[in-house]
Amino acid sequence: MFEKMTTILEELSEKQIWQHIYDSYSERNFVDKNKQKEYLSIINNFDYERIADSVLKETFKFDLARKHQINKIDSQKKKDIYIFPYRDEMLLKVIASLLSKHFSMHIAANCHSFQKQRGAKTAFRWLLNRADLSPHFCLKLDIRNFFNSIDPTDFLKKLPDAIRSDGVLYRLLQQLLLNEKVLLEDGKLIADKKGLMAGTPIAPFLSNFYLKTLDDYFWERQILYVRYSDDIIVFGNEVEVKAYAEKIENYLQNIGLELNTEKTKIYPPHTKWHFLGFSYCCQTIDISENALAKMKGKIRRLAALLNRKRMKNSWSIEKTSYIFIRRLNKKFYGIQADQNELCWARWFFPLLNTNKTLHILDRFVQDKIRFAATGHHRKLNYKQVPYSLLRKINYLPLQSAYFMFKTDFENYEQMVLAKLRIK
Image (cartoon, rainbow, N blue to C red; front, top):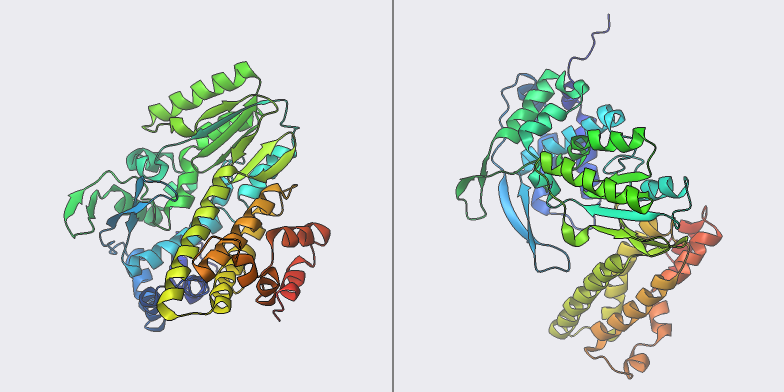
């Protein structure tokens, strides 16, 4: 007779789920060879079976996480992330996959973060399919340091009964989250209020559960509200959105969270607002100024890097331009990238209905390619690096790709590959 599974962690003994984690990591553009080797060793040496056995017997002990500070993109501020040794990191990736498989249905319907088949596009579409947003006041809120500020004791109490009733899983989460000991980068041991630990594989999915009561409040009242992790957007008339702002702020304060006042704002009707990298104004959906600035920063840094390499290695104009464009094609169009990896086309094109910002970005890209290839910003660059050379070495403007996407969505990827002469 079939014996009912008592814990989802019994699936840890199945090789294919570990293999999937290894394969997904190996397909990324930039791979840490040491990590990749360790992941493969865990599979080939059957270490995953020993890990699974110790987890099920509840003898498994996580190593201490190491706390790192990294720069925020286009900001002088830093943020804390936590990194586990490779063995524990791979285990947490597997557990995160199992959590997503078994417990996604317990996440609020208006929360769209870190779930399969859900994301920024589904959040935006859900709003657009329910109303013309232009006549409404828009309240945009951002929670400061969300993952690391969550009280783990309170969080564990708020987990759905389906998780709490899985004793082996629940006690493993207790061990992971309630241990305050961490290592600093220099190896010093400290006690740290680390919350769900940003940077760990399990934090994003788990964080969806913490604000479910708040999410459900707005869902049950059929209020235009969407949350994506620490980003919240809600619509109504002026009186309503002010009341919503007060309610949300009070709710967050009661559980030890606070709003980022710099990113929290009320927008009047018929004015532009931003959410998840998009801007919206009078039914026009474009790339937000912040998303544009972040991409410009990445392109500017890439140009500076390749210019230095060009001078050091005596690269030709054509070789430097080719390397630049190859990197851009991975980022923009996913060429030779993991199918699950974020690229601009997959993220932005389905929702955009204007090419205004794409035009700006195309001009910026061409300027930075020419700088990387010559080391100068000058009119002579147009002769030294003509547009015909860029096309010869597979440069595809974002505007051209966008129009192909809008013209023939089903054949878009094949059209891009054909334009880039990639079989």
